[in-house]
Amino acid sequence: MLLVWISEIKHIIECILCFIEENPISVGIVTSMIVGSLWFRKYIRQKRAEAFFGFYAKLSLCLKSLRTKLEENGQLNTSDTKAGNIYSLIYVEDDIKNICPSYKKPDDKEIQLYQAAAKELKELLLNTENNVYPRGSKRQEWYESQHIIFLFCEFLESKEYWHTTNKEFDNGDNEYKHIKRCKLLIEAMDCIQESINNVKY
Image 1 (cartoon, rainbow, N blue to C red):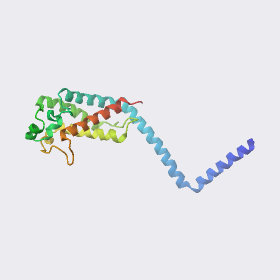
Image 2: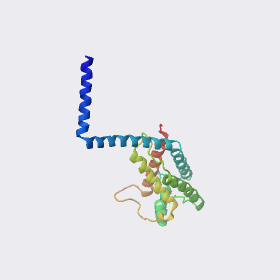
Image 3: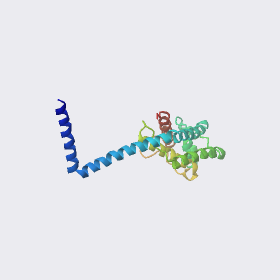
Image 4: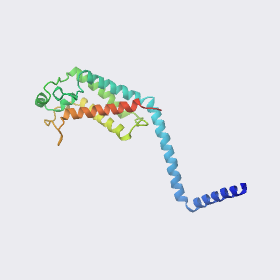
C-alpha cells in the first residue's frame, strides 16, 4: 500500500514537472501574478497599520473639529430650508434673502475659524502617504466621501465659490441646492467617521 502511494506521488510530481517544462511562459506568468498579489496584500496591510497609528486618528480629529465648529453655529442645518446652512453662501446675495430669510451669515471671525480647520483637513488629505481605506470599509465610498469633504474645504477657503448662482434647484431636482449639498457633506463625514470607528487592525 505504501509503495503504491509513493508511486502515485512520484507520478504526480513527474506530471507537474513535465507541465512546467512544456509551458514555461504560462507558469512564469502565473507565478508572477501570485507573487505580485501576495506583495500587494502585504503592502496594503502595512499601509493600514501605519494609517491605524497616525492618519486615521488625525483625520478623525480634523473632521470632528470642523464639524463641531459648523454645528455650534447652525451651519449644518438640513431640516429648515429658510434657516439655511453653510452652503447658502452659493446663492447670490438677493437670493439668500429670498430662499433662506432666516440664515445668519457667518462673520469674518467665524469664517476664519472654518477656514483654518478646513485648511488643516485639506492638507492632511493631500499630504499623507497612508491614505488607504480601512479594512472592512468600501473603497469607493471611502474615497468618494473624501472627495466631497475636500471640495467643501475648497469651498470654505475660497470666496470665489460664493454667491455664484441664482438657481435654487439642480436640474430636475425638487430639493434646494444648499440642503442637498449639506446632506451629502454630512453623509460623507459620517461615512469616514464610521469607517475609522470600526477599524480593527
